[in-house]
Length: 270
Image (tube, rainbow, N blue to C red; front, side, top):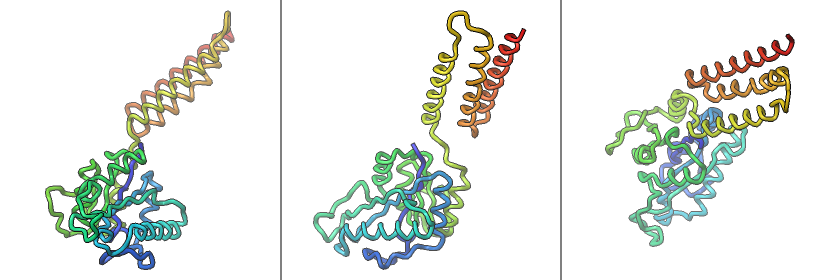
C-alpha cells in the first residue's frame, strides 16, 4: 500500500471563478507543476478529487469534465517534463439541488463525504493513514479527515468552519507542498515491510539449505555458505533504516553471521 496526496481541483490546482467545463479555459496556478513533481519525487502518488456540481446544474456534461482533466494532466506533464504525474482523477457530478433530474441527489462521493478518497484507496491500494488531503475549502478538510488522512487547508485566514480543523494551513500551493514534505518521507506500512522481511527470511533459509554440506561436508563449505548469506540480514536492516532499534538488530545479525563464517573458514585451515 502506498501513501497519496489527494488534491482538490478548482482554486487548488487551477483557477476557477465558476463552473468550468471548457478545457481552453484551464490555467494552472503558480507552483503547481513544480509542487506536484516534488511530491512525486518524495514517494507520494497524486490523486485529484473534485466536486463537479456544474454537471448537475446543466452547465456542461460529464464528457466536458473528462476533457478538462485531460487538459490539466497534459499541462502538468508538459511543465514538469514527465508523463503520468497525476495518477487519477475522481469527480462527483451529483448535487442535491440539481437542475438535471438524473443528478439530483446526495452522493457519498460528494465532499465533505469521503467517498472519492475511499474509492481511490480501494482502486489503487492506498495507505490512507500516511496520506494527505490538500484543498482550499473546509469540505476538503472534512473529507480528508473522515477518510483518516492528514489535511492542509490553502488560504491562511480563511474561515475553516465545521467541527474539523486542518492539520495545517498554507498560504498557497507551494507552501502546502512544503508542509507535506516537512512531515518526513512517506512511511511504508509495517505490514508491507513485514511481508518483504518474511520473503527475505525464506530466501535465507533456501540459500542455507542449498549450501548445506551433504554427507560428510567440510567447515569450509559451511563458512562459504555463511559468507554468501551474510549480506541478506544487512539488506533486511536497510528496510528498517528509519527504525533505529530494528536496524541495529539486523546489523548485529550481520556481524554474527560474518564472524561465524570467518570461524568456520579458520577452522578448516587448521
